[in-house]
Image (cartoon, rainbow, N blue to C red):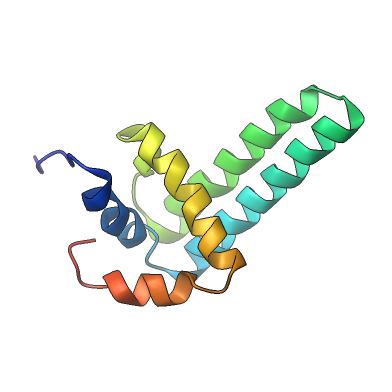
Length: 111
């Protein structure tokens, strides 16, 4: 059994390695973006069912990408808080055009 990750600095390269395929990242980012849109819609419309839809959508897209494209187990199961934070970090890096450079930076670094 692999050693448990102890720090977020160790987790981030692992997380990127678990999202090594561009299609995995694309599906994941689409789910996060749609989840964010549903979250904003919930706030604007006062329809709190959209909060549930936001969470379900975000995780459904991500997990489907892992199971169908990447063929690995989502990090959420072992590291839920770090995984959630990393979903947003990945989304933010994508939004500012720095995700691919970050992926290249950590390729082969134990991820």
